[in-house]
Image (cartoon, rainbow, N blue to C red):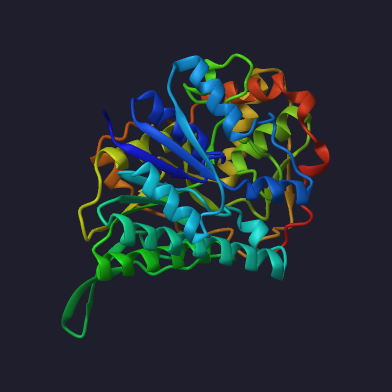
Length: 387
């Protein structure tokens, strides 16, 4: 019997694919979610490309295909009694924490959305820390962070820590953070709280600072020919990551929405590499009293470079794609130095799946097959502005 893994935020773009992937490998898996993001989607009037059944329905479909059980818990991890009950009942060896509001634009929309993001994200992480400390301090906590915690400093970005010499003395200290939204700030505060828990309580924590993710399918989602196991693929201005948005815009004939000059650089990775990275963290847990940081990306691109890649792949499918530069709704550097380290996951055996023309073409074809579901009224930027 392999380890038990509890996935918080199991209804999300990454949470459900992670659950299937680990279940397929023989792990005993449970997912927990309160469907809060679905409530936000309804509030904002946005929908995914492909409708996603609820967790229990997907768990039933998965069992029918594989014979494997994925246990489902529905509730709020911020409610202490509920979370403690789940952890005591399931007895996880590993907790994967996706259970947060992951949208920078949403966090900057207004005071209420900023407070929702801060309150939800920090409250969830704090509750998980106390549950582990109280019930079983040996549980390995894997928390999904973001490369956005670092911002765009004019120096190389290390993996969580850096060696500093000052006035003749040396120390290893957390790398300075320059978050660009209340969402990214909440992830910085997550990291600070977890590092405190490691130092004070001896917790074992892996902090995965992930770049923007792209992709629609995984090996497990392809098992269902009716597309009922697909992740929440979004293309709107709040939840759609840049490449997923560009792919969708290309299919419906909307010029690719390049913000500002388009020189913004970030580290990107395929959704199947997210699963690989998380799996490696599960298989190689942090030591007791260790706060381990891993930068989770495989390639660095500018927005302009991504738009050119999409245009080239679309052209081979007979799709003529143009771009349009929009006033940048975000407060960010549009031309900057960006060199981030990502050696820790590679040293554990990460085998990157790079962004080839074939990968983009496959994404374009899937979106074309579901073109009738695309709502053009939610594609263009408008509401999500940094005030």
